[in-house]
Image (tube, rainbow, N blue to C red; front, side, top):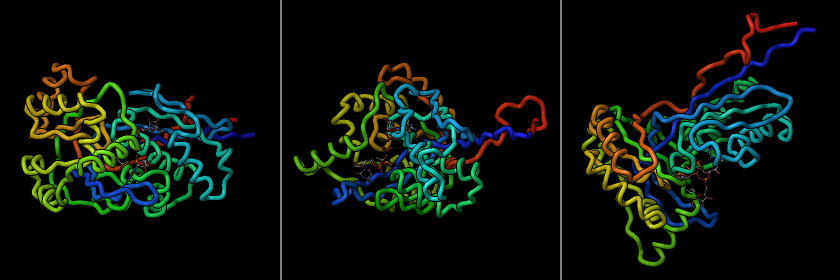
Amino acid sequence: MLSVVPTPITVRVPAKVNLHLSVGDARPDGYHELVTVFQALSLTDDVTVVAADDPAIEVKGEGADEVPTGPENLAWKAVRLLAEHCGRDPENPGVRISINKGIPVAGGMAGGSADAAATLQAVNQLWRLELGRDELSELAGKIGSDVPFSLQGGTALGTGRGERLVPVLARHTYHWVIALDREGLSTPGVYGELDRLRADNGNGRIGEVEPLLEALASGDPRQLALLLGNDLQSAAVSLRPGLRRTLRAGVQAGALAGVVSGSGPTCAFLCTDSDEAVRVAAELSGAGVCRTVRVAHGPVPGAKVVSEEPAHRPTPPQVHA
Ligand SMILES: C[C@@](CO)(OP(=O)(O)O)[C@H](O)COP(=O)(O)OP(=O)(O)OC[C@H]1O[C@@H](n2ccc(N)nc2=O)[C@H](O)[C@@H]1O
Ligand SMILES: Nc1ncnc2c1ncn2[C@@H]1O[C@H](COP(=O)(O)OP(=O)(O)O)[C@@H](O)[C@H]1O
């Protein structure tokens, strides 16, 4: 009898930073209406899926210990949703998933969303579903507000919960220094803290998004730096006061500007060019204000298949007796 060696599929997927994150009031469903500009950065996770009788998930790399491997893992949610969508058994999807994390966990850089997006893309190919971009994006939005952007990548304007996207013209590659904190922050916790701060003292709001879109079209990082803004920053700083020091240290080290990424606690610093980013990263890493520092650039593409190789390549062919 002939059996086919299962072919694993690996998808690489980027982190994101919010260049602009304007948060409206809480809606009746508990979500906040957003106007945000996402940019996909070159910190990535790799997600590999392979057909297997015993479904399982394994997580390696940056912060792997903090990532659940059960049904709460967003990659599992993606597999179950796709199985339901195409009439397979969601309890027994016959897929094994391996995640190699380079995106900080609970860092406000959409790592879990990235893994869900990568899994949608990979399983779409594994099961030869041929779902198009719009259909995958609709499924992505059911998993989490950030998941459609992780699929799409680039630079995009997000509205609604953040799931409705329009691509944005970004003329330039931007160079970032990313400061990772010692411990994550909970996204609902940070939104809740913002509501509390606003109820207590009417906490200020960042301005309109149009000037930032113009700065992106001009391609001038100095202009963009002046316009980075995040309504969640005050809430993240309120929960993690040490971030104030981190933000100051990045600018003192020579970054054009710094901003808390999404719900934090990761801070992103925009630099004039790649050499300057390396220099700022070295100085910031010596300042003792964060766990570790990375250099990244953006925009980069969204979730993308990077390999479709045989799992164990004994010697070709892929079919054995
Ligand atoms: C803050 C942002 C900014 O891009 O990113 P992160 O910092 O998490 O990466 C996002 O809004 C996070 O999106 P995501 O992490 O996908 O959130 P979801 O799973 O959809 O929602 C988790 C919880 O966050 C809160 N939430 C999320 C999105 C939104 N527009 N309003 C909200 O209030 C709700 O409490 C919700 O229950
Ligand atoms: N594949 C995954 N990778 C990382 N975290 C995950 C994943 N699936 C579920 N989670 C959970 O989601 C929480 C938020 O993680 P993450 O998406 O990395 O951060 P953020 O929402 O701040 O961008 C984590 O604390 C973890 O418990």
